[in-house]
Length: 430
Image 1 (cartoon, rainbow, N blue to C red):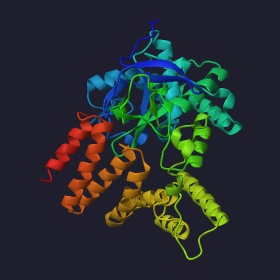
Image 2 (cartoon, rainbow, N blue to C red; image 1 turned 120 degrees about the vertical axis):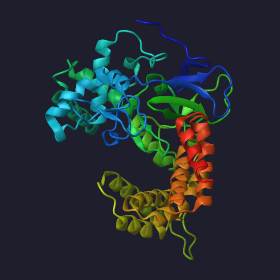
Image 3 (cartoon, rainbow, N blue to C red; image 1 turned 90 degrees about the vertical axis):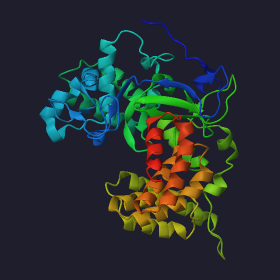
Image 4 (cartoon, rainbow, N blue to C red; image 1 turned 90 degrees about the horizontal axis):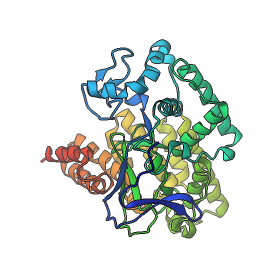
């Protein structure tokens, strides 16, 4: 097997209290690319078929269908041939099961890892610093509920892939699913819409901080790690594993649930933004601690319900906003979450004016509460800019798109296709 390679300006090291990590060995400026990584394996989300190439994730019209299953689409013959080693694992089953072909993305990723490990004996270009088998699994930390989910995924793996794969032991499969669940990445576009899922062993070495100094974005299915702060030699590389909008207790609850650790970064120690994130209304009789705690429980439960709901109704959003608004200021993160959901419902219903109203309420607090160069802020500028243009509010639209572009030039790099398209979009309005 090929020896471990180096990435210029980056080295793997043992991070005190965190285990493995990455640090820089040379200076990096804001917006500079630390490194890029091809995925070890990846899958396009089923709902994106028809608009994105199955192989390279390029978004374009006129994609060509797989001649057999008619489901997978490609830019050209080159992309189709490039994907066949993985697509052949699914093509026949997609035909046989039709609408009943429904493995989860975790199952699809695991199937592809098994196939690749069998076919490829050399270290891949996505394993310069860490082998796929060295990914942390936290198998001993998995609770019964997650173990049952993994066992369900194993059953699905056998159902949909048994004709094309030889499977390792159940213990090995449980470990592999835990590795994918702990280390998988959601590949997103410029508006943070999900395009697919992928595993990047080298990028998985980057530890978490709620004060990140890098951001991970995507060029097709390639992960790019860029600085969002100036970095000096010896400094550890940190990204964020979770949405940083929420207060310290919520963030750490999510980290413990998904990644089995508690963050001890500066923001988690000082909780400097928690008061602003949990701002309550000024009333003649201020809400007491119990009323605030009760409303926070209500907000958290409502968020969980909305995550699992198939269709979020406008009435539910407004009801929740009215109830929480009795205690929370509009800038409170639970109000912001619900307004963001309401904006999504308005977009789904075609009510663009209401979508703008909610988006404008969200944008200013987002700009304060998120770290610099956050794609959460950029994506909101993009959404609003395109809505303004759709309603012929040209000046507002161009201004919002330019603000999105300023963030994206750092997060994605100035030569990214998203930036090229955005500049054309702005130019067309002049």
